[in-house]
Image (cartoon, rainbow, N blue to C red; front, side, top):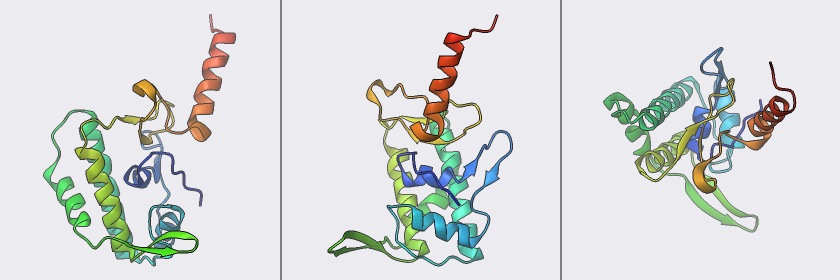
Length: 179
C-alpha cells in the first residue's frame, strides 16, 4: 500500500486515505492491517501499533469527522456538534510518549495515542484562523492540504502526484490550444 504524506498535517494525511472522493472513492484503509501500515508510514506517529476492527472503526470515524470539519471551515460553515465530539473525544486520549535515542526522537504508544495525536493536529489546524486550507485543483484529486506557499497561490496538493500533472496539462494547453 502506498500512502502520500503531502498534505502538511497528519490529520489531513489521514483524510487523504480516501482517494477520489467525488467520483469513485477508494478507501486505502480497508482493513486493520492497512491502518497499521498507514501509522507506520506516518513519520509523526508511533511505530508498530497493532490495530483491530474496533480501532479501524474509530480511525475511520475520526477521518470522516476531520474531513467534514475541514470542509466546513473552508466553506465558512458552522461545525457540526457530532463531528466536534468525535475529534474532541479522540484528542482527549493519551498522547504518544517521546523517546530519545542515538538515532533521534521516536514516538511510542498504542493506536489510541496515535489517533489522539492526529485529532490534536486537526484541532490545532482548524482553530488557527491564519491557516490556508485548500482542496487540490487537479480534477481527479480530492486531497485537502495546507497551502504554505508564498502568497498562498499553490493549487495542487503535492508536486509529485498532482503538481507535475497540472503543470504539464497547462503547458500542453498553451502549446496546443483547442479551437
